[in-house]
Image (cartoon, rainbow, N blue to C red; front, side, top):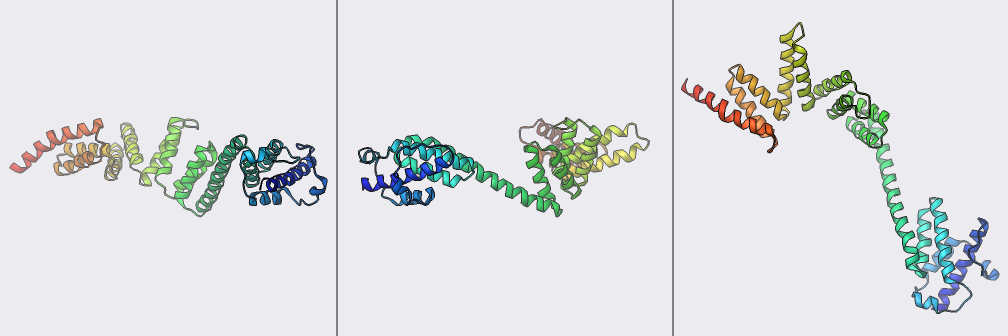
Length: 309
């Protein structure tokens, strides 16, 4: 069995010499020219070696023959590196695994490194396929695909393409895309600060049904109302946006709508929105505490008054 293995390794050595000689490098000196004629390719020989019954390292080291097994191992690893450089990763792995039959420790690092490379390459191809699918969807007017593609470009720091995709998503009524754009322009996140553009995208987000955009737009309108010739109209628009945000689950907006109704004496509606605020607020937020205070102080008092009427 050992002799049979060494003959096979000898043939492999010959094939390797042929490959390295072609590249101007010779890693194995001992060449059987007669046997070399029988070798068609290194790949065929590797397949033949894989079919041989495996022998232990001890059996290889104590066998007889003219081939130095250590040199064969080194040559296999170098051949594998050449395949890696050519992006022929499966062939490279075949070389490393063949080398591991001779010296597992020497081949271990090459195998581990290539396994990571194959994994990364698989992930890259998967992402490329996903990007191509999203590009087709975005081109056909799919807002969700355009938004997701924008996120991928943003994470790759490809900001121009991210902006294009998110703007396209905005045009197709995606609620989150304008919010991301508004934040970018407000905070100067990888773009120049532009508050006019930020306000524009907050308004678009509000129109597309995004609760936070609706709330922020309502606050901007409240600021503008003080200097606007038609103050009442602007305040009414702000209130409707705030109410929309509240109905979409925005806790702070709901609390503020509750206060507005309470100030108008519409206590039933005020109670409804305070309850919305309490329901949608996060348990540990300071807003929740204020809602509890509202519920126990304002509403309880008003309910008592109403029950006596």
